[in-house]
Length: 263
Image 1 (cartoon, rainbow, N blue to C red):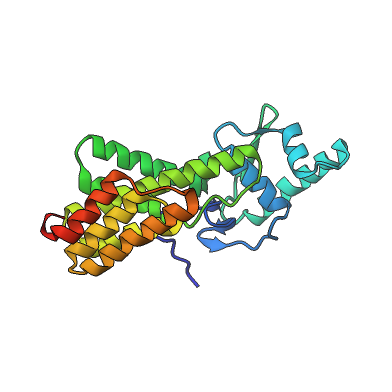
Image 2 (tube, rainbow, N blue to C red):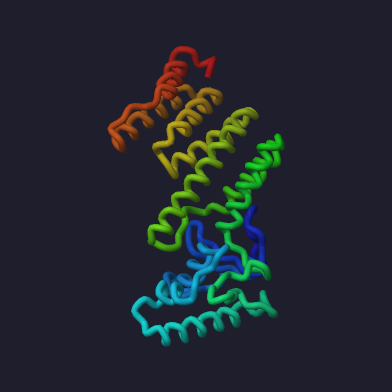
């Protein structure tokens, strides 16, 4: 059976995926690994330090914190060797993991890819295209990034991992909002509404997404739903923060009620 990668996720010899859940792919096909096991810990840690790698002693402490250092070192050597055997069909002449100057790194040079790296690259390319005025190409690049984002970062529970998870999540939501704005500006109201609602599924407190949904409902001729969207927004903010909507949200609500043609 042939496995086809989704848009934005290239079929590469080896892919380490951390967005949504840990996944390991060989030529696009899933490789079975034990959830939360040593393979996931090793590859997940290296994927989050993909540019600089991790020092050997630090890696041993992360994966075998209670083991004798010598035994942990032997276990690491065995694990790296076993992964080379697993991925020999995809990387016949290379190891998926390199050791350089006492640091371990994923072998990006010879065919290992990381979805987090690809996500960031797609967003940065979209940002660049926006700056040079190529809006349509920018949206295509942004959509590739959104396709890669299958969910929040799955790996790790350290402070560093939590910070990275929030960085990626904020970047995803920002791109989602930009795509919604693009669809609205091009009178693609159903697509803009879908993007706004997906954004709200990730962050129900985003007032810009509530406003986008309200505008889309009005443009689609469903003004009553726009009013309900405002009330939903107001209730969520009250429940979560004991706060009122922003003035822009209130002003839009008044226009929906009193002058929907201006929305």
